[in-house]
Amino acid sequence: MAAIVDPQRDVEQYIAEADANGDKIKYVIETHSHADFVSGHLELAQKTGAQIIFGQRANTEFPH
Image (cartoon, rainbow, N blue to C red):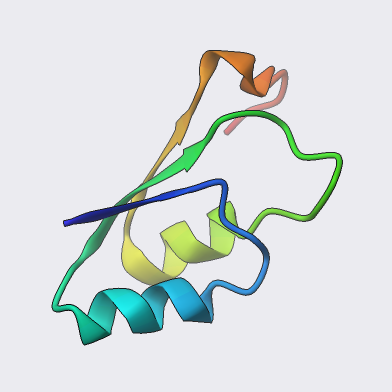
């Protein structure tokens, strides 16, 4: 089982690494809202079935 924290937009690297190690990505964790880059959390969750978890500092004020 694997968790990816604050994934960058190119999610294929995470999927390839998990596959190479025989792991399944179960969680995508966002610690904060990202003004510094575009997060790949949605695509990663869609491609792997992982659950997205937002930290308290993520300040999500939109449906997720």
